[in-house]
Amino acid sequence: MRSWGGAVLAALLLSGCASVTRGTTENISIASTPSGAKADVSGTEAPFSCVTPCVVEVNRNADITVSLSKEGYEPQIIPLTREVSGSGGAGFAGNLLLGGVVGMGVDAATGAAMDHKPNPVIVTLQPVPAPAPPPAVRHHRKPRVPVS
Image (cartoon, rainbow, N blue to C red; front, top):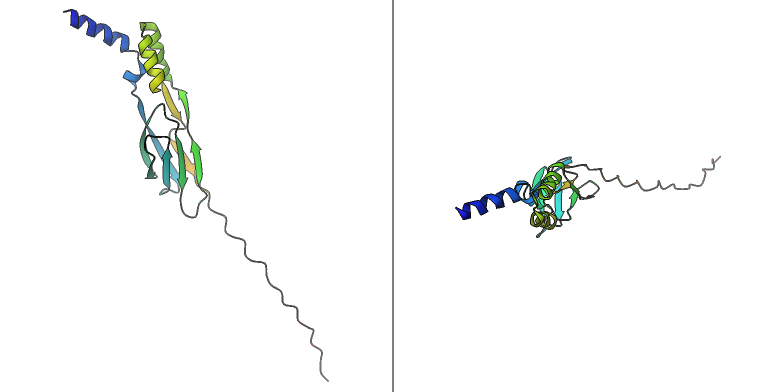
């Protein structure tokens, strides 16, 4: 009976913990206009790429940067910021109400109360400007002199 009581107490203390209710990872959606761009995602344990539209799973506490490239278009680099989300903040605050100091430390270390912004990442790629045509070459001719 005593072990059940400890389990129930632990469940109550952790019920407000954002790392339990939200997890330590999140999905980031990446889309581009036009689609089919290569998205390089850095800031993860191992950098990886996908082709837009795509969804990637990242750690909530990671500093993420998305670089988009497509032939004929200017490359774009989008650094993502981390912000406390509404539900993450509620989970973090739940630690205060239930006395879960350990839970607060876990949430802070894992970033469980955070969300990356922007999410989804939506980018309109700009075409590479066409090269300027070379200047016209003008040939100077001697004026014709009428022959009589």
